[in-house]
View 1 (cartoon, rainbow, N blue to C red):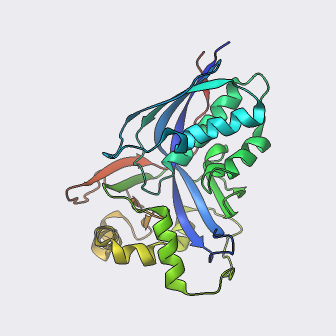
View 2 (view 1 turned 120 degrees about the vertical axis):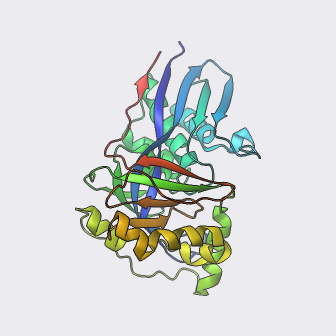
Length: 303
C-alpha cells in the first residue's frame, strides 16, 4: 500500500562556526550553533512498490542540480530503504525555495525531511536514534536538520548535538548570490591558510548555555570568512556594509551579520526591525526576507 508524507525542510544558519584543522582522514571537526529558519523547501515522499524517482521544481540554478543519485534527498531515501528494508521504492517531490549552494543547508534539510517523512509512514519506524545514525553518514548538517530542535549546539562532525531552548524569532535578511562557494574549496583554502600539522586542534569555546540574542551577538563568528572574503569581494562588501556603525545605528548595536556555513549566503538578524532591509544589491544578488524559527515543522501524513 502506497503512503505519502509532506514536510517543510527548513534552512539553517550557523550563528557561530569554528572549524578544527584537517585530520589524517581528510575530515574536519567543528563547533557550531545551528539555528533553523522559516525559509523552507517543500518535500513530499511517497512509498512505491519498486520504482525510484526524484522530481525537483522551484528555484533551481541554471546548471541544474547534478546527477539524481548524488542528490542528498535521494541518498537519504536510499539509506533509509537499505536500513529498514522498506520501502521497495520511493517517489520524492522537491519544491526548492532555499538557495542552492549557499551555506543554508538546503540539500541537508531535504535529506532530513526525507528521513523524517519515511519514518512517519513506515509500517516499522526506525525511531529517532537510528535516524540520527543515518543522518550522520550523509553530512555534518544532516543530523541537526533531521532532529526536532530549532536551536542546537553541535560539535565533532556535526553528529554531537545539545539542544538549546529556542530564542524568540527574529527577522532574518538573506543576501543570496548567483555564484556559490564550493564547500571543498572553502575547506582547502582554510587548510592552506593555517599551515598547521594534520590533526592539530584548537581548544573549543562552546558555551554552556545560550540565553539571549545578545549573548549570540557576542559569540557570532565564522572561521570560513577569513579565507572566503579574500576571494569574494561581493560577499566582503555586503558584510562590511551590514557591520558599519551607520547601519547598526538604524537596526541596533547587537545586530548579527555573518556568512552562513562555507558561503556564499550572507545573513543579517537585526536587533530592531525597521520593516525593510535597506540593502542594495547588484546583478545576480537577491534579498530574501524570512525569520528564525522557534519550532520545527511537523511531518504531515497526506495519504
